[in-house]
Image (cartoon, rainbow, N blue to C red; front, top):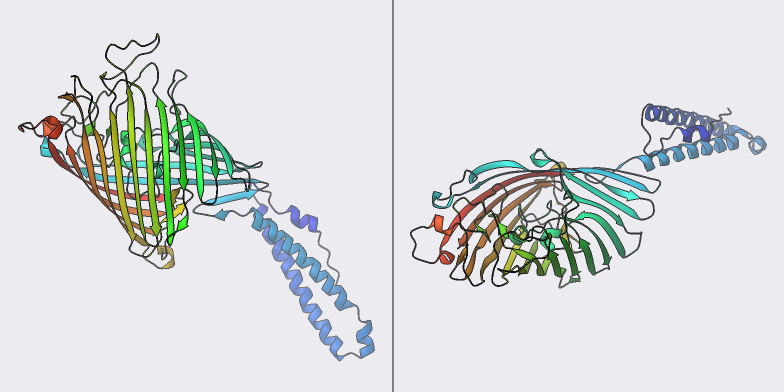
Length: 509
């Protein structure tokens, strides 16, 4: 009854991490099945021998050897099976919304995201000569991503956006953060630490778009390098950045940014206090910035507020001649069970290029030159409540994925969240002098206040449907004369409203 199976043969059948599957998996299954049959046969024989022992004389029982030998063989065979099963389990992917493969210090997790938006933006008094208002639908994001670890404490994240039929880039980052270290460093294409709403992934924001100052200030991703320190209840990040990922070698714009957050567990919930600062310089061959904002949706490219000249189309062509700007930000948020609130304010100071100012050789300005430096302000506040009892996700300075209590796949109806927000932006500022878009010395960029309401339904942790209504109330701005041409009020004081409805379907993995 001797059975000899080489452990080397069995373990060699287990696939190495990253190796092609081919016929390895079926062969390994056959080996395991054969081993299990041998174990079952041995167990049956041992049981039979023990039954014979019970009937044999005590002396015979004392000298009987086969049970001891068979038990040893059985234990050896089981150890081989356990070893093979352990190796199979080690190489099998873990599932965290998508497969994650691990082995030899490496990890690799493919992912993706789809966001489809359909919406309506009203044309105030049907006064704007554009076909870009009304109904529209488009793919907001069509993402393919990969992230993982490399031995030595390195991580990577690559996110490509194919919406619109072209390749766009979101985070493309190589980072260094050893295990158990509070320090980290990263280089790549990233958001330069400009506020809670923008640092939170677009998958987890309360509304379909971030707060409007992110749009107005042009707070986009940049190529750069950054360092950070993350403790149990606070963090600080700082970085130096250049321009967009696909700009040419002539790009000379740059930016420094720093953000600190204190996030204690206190008062029965999760608190968040943050502050940020950005110092930005424009490209020397085209020194200028256009500050403008959409009406809380990207289903239209029309802007009702912006620091360009008056027009009747909603398309603002030029902005302010400026060598750069500075942005000061403050953040406040809290989570208590199903209730959360969040608020942010940002103040932007422009370093305007003055009329008659002579620039050094090789430098040029774009946009209108102003007598004085303008400054702009924006603030929002929101309150949200999970009607189904969830608690909004949060992790180290930003909102994160929420765990749905009764998802579809468990027989439930998912989670439902109701969120309201007021979002205010002021691009109107006294600058003196005259010029296009300047009314009695005031730069008529306009004020936009959004009264927003969103209903978010999450059937599972990874699927979301949003219905959002916005009432945009505009005072002044480049289109005020076209919308209300008969008013006797100054252009800076003429007000009108715009209705916006946006529906979103989202899947991420």
